[in-house]
Image 1 (tube, rainbow, N blue to C red):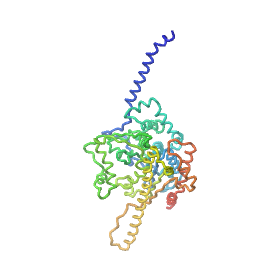
Image 2 (image 1 turned 90 degrees about the vertical axis):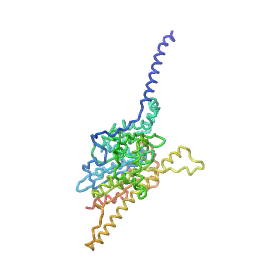
Image 3 (image 1 turned 135 degrees about the vertical axis):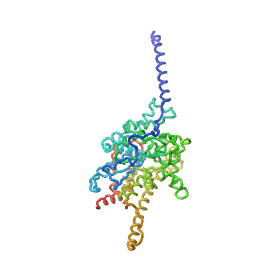
Image 4 (image 1 turned 45 degrees about the horizontal axis):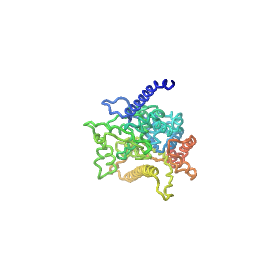
Length: 477
């Protein structure tokens, strides 16, 4: 009798299983990444551009830019520690007492550093109360793995339009950034202007999440989730998949900005400028390039310094404009470089390294070497400016003895530039230096490791020679 009483339940089980499978197939069919919106015919609300950011208590005359490198949670923690110190460092500028943090005008970031940059850009000083428990002290890596192994997500991941990077972006969107978009970032209205950087896989060039960049896609950045920009910035190859954006059809009257048009004519005279312009102009070909696929910003610049170099070099760059207007007196770049030790062990063995080691080395060696060169280029730009200012001053002094001589053209104003780097390599004690260099670049660290990274940032910044020189210069009336 017992078996006969069980038989009626079987169709119900089959029906439930069928409904479950149908639901899973529906999930797979409907799963799609978040698509960036096209530019509206009429814009309303704030736009995410540097010019839209008011100065408030911040002045242009003391112009401070922060650069947060890649390196997982270790980079996020190190940059957080530097923010803490800047908040605690009091200065007097133009007769007003304030913290150095209040004078920060822009932050450019890559990968792990983008979490700190975006969080501070969105929430301001609230970062000092809840960023540690919300992100730094959380095993983010484990949380992402749990999402990936959730059976419901298997069917979503079966969709060709939804991948691991979208799962990661969902987690950041819900658990870290409170579902904020670039409208929220723009609506704050005050500086710093945060530049989150990724890499376009099509040409290996840097891609920044600003409206200026999105204009080339005929797309509206304001509705785009900040978490997805951070996810693209930190999408390390082989561990996460690329993040996709749509390149919308360009209107017939679309024109490149003047400096891009001029750059396209500079192949023979200025190759650097030509390729810079060409790599932006390529987005006009929306029929052949209807989509972009982005990965870790470290593939094109693992420091995050190149946006500032471009803003200084370009005639339309926001830094160049302010310098040309004579608005900036002191220009300070603080690079927070969480570069790890390369952990060179492959040369100790006769057998060649495995595929996994080769993959990681392929992705990181060029990053680290190129990042060093970028910092040196910025120092060279600083030195060139200082030499030019000295030469002009010397010429003017000589010409003072000849009143009939025409006036010598010069800069709008003299610039006092500083390039400051926070780097584990500067730790004097070899044993202690090695300990910090060997902290993993993953998104899972112990609370003790996080605390040590936060504390070492201010220590390294205070000891940095150029930072000391800058602080001394503030004491001179």
